[in-house]
Amino acid sequence: MTDVLVLLVVFSGASTMLYVIATAIRKTRSVRAVAELHAKLLDKCASNQDLAGYLESAAGRKFLESVTTEHANPAGRILNAVQAGVVLTLVGVAELIVRGAGFGVDGDHFLLVSGAIALAIGVGFLVSAGISFALCRSWGILTAAQSTN
Image 1: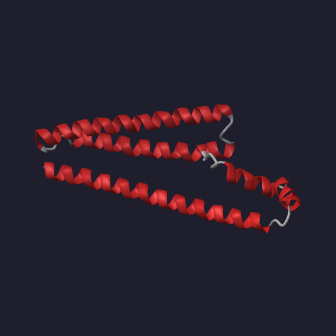
Image 2 (image 1 turned 45 degrees about the vertical axis):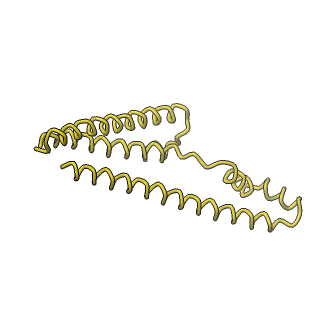
Image 3 (image 1 turned 90 degrees about the vertical axis):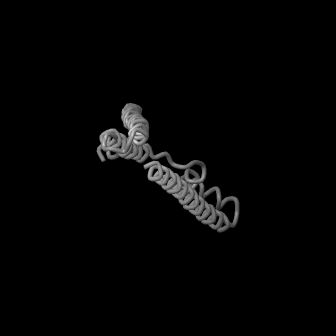
């Protein structure tokens, strides 16, 4: 039984590492492509007046906003927290339910501890998402369309 648990931990750790690496590579490529596009766009401006005129236009303001900071997407972040919370809560509940299924004392103890931890983290994500939603809504950060979707 401990071999299965070790294999499960190693597989989940390796999967998490691969996901983090793939996400970092994708974000790096995306940022690099946007930087190249912005460099080409700035090279097209022949003089300072052209550049100043462009930056004063609506498209220029949008360009400056995209360069300065990454846009915050509170609705997307809240949804991600809800998804993580639901998944971890269900994993924790499932581990607590199956812990008495004959895995032995060590297996039952592992499932009890890991199930309790997963359940606590999942509920924490859900509470955090609820608080974030309430605060974003009261501060007017979420638009009506974002809060109903």
